[in-house]
Length: 113
Image 1: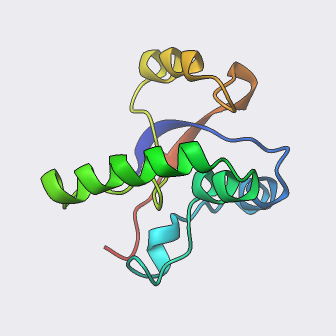
Image 2: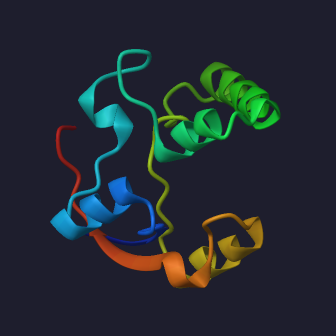
């Protein structure tokens, strides 16, 4: 049974648009485990924009996650879904691509578990 979820998808980005067109969004971690797997769109954007301060912050956040919550998915490799519309709508305060026009309702089918 699929999970009903919401996600912010910036379809102005060609890679995201292609995934949406195909109806397939794949977590970077799906193809391997860190450090062998690809990176998330968020992480790729940080590297592309050369935002070193944000990169350092994300590394610190991930170090805490790895130490205290090792079973949880890293923000550097995962895809983030919201379980209800109210939670998803609150994320617009985060800015960036978390804009109402990027909000999509999805059916998530986990594979390869």
